[in-house]
Image (cartoon, rainbow, N blue to C red; front, side):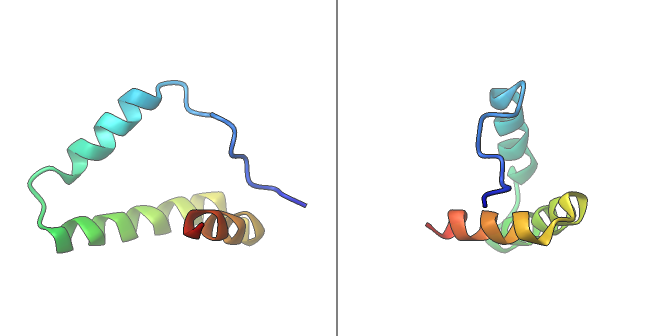
Length: 62
């Protein structure tokens, strides 16, 4: 049974995308990768449901 919500859920998708791109401005590839890793871990902690997180990893991998 799927628990991961893949339906559009952000009210301002474009604003979020712009902020995500902006936070990476001026970073090297390594710094950007570290930022992404920290962001993923922070969001995973916020979600806190291992089933949802594993489902998201599977979907992200394709």
